[in-house]
Structure formats: structure tokens, C-alpha cells
Length: 141
Image (tube, rainbow, N blue to C red; front, side, top):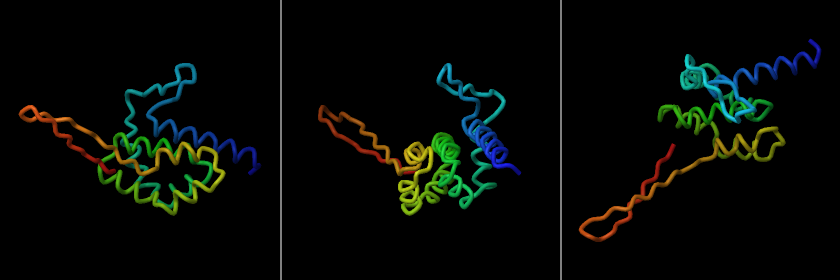
């Protein structure tokens, strides 16, 4: 198969996976995703975890599939179950993230942003009998 056809096939498949992970097509004119009302990207992301698995996902992330995997990670972060988030987070351990950081893979910065261990902290100010107490919550996923 000619190299140009392989690249075209990969590019087309890559764009398809990205659209499926996003839940629709990205419109450059509106700078947003036009979501399909009859498609649920969270279902696709859940199936992706089981069907594609860790090894292929990591290979895609370290290669030309970085943008695809970045969108997949975003979808899991937004709509995945706690178990799915933990599973995928464990796939991107320190060693894998370091390899991606050192690579020249196109899309690595977007991928790293979406794969990093983010600990969201919420500060809630409570008032009890006129005194203030600060309560800190950390969510880990």
C-alpha cells in the first residue's frame, strides 16, 4: 500500500475517533463541537476502555494519536465513572507521562494537560454562630 494512502487512511480514522470521543464534529467557524443528539460519547469512551485497552491506548498516545487520546481522556474526565477514571489514570503513570514529555509527538502538550493528575480543591466558607471556618475538600480522580 502506498505511504500516502496509509497516511490518508490513518488521518481519516484519527478524525473519526476524535469526533466520536467529542460527540460530534468540531466546527472551525464556531470554534465548538456540534454535538449529535443521537450519539453518546460517554458510551463510546466506556467501550474504548474495554475494547482498545491500555497497551494500544498508550501506543496511540505516544504516536500520532495524541489528539485522539487527549479527547478520549477529556471525555472520561467529564462523564466517566469513578472506576473508569481510576483505570485510565493508572494507565498514564509517571513513567508513561515522562516518556510523552520527552517525545516530539504532535499534540503532546494537549495530551499532557488532559492526562496530568489534577487534584481539584474546593474551599467552602462556613459560618457557625458568627465565626468563620474554612473547610477544604479535595477530589481525586
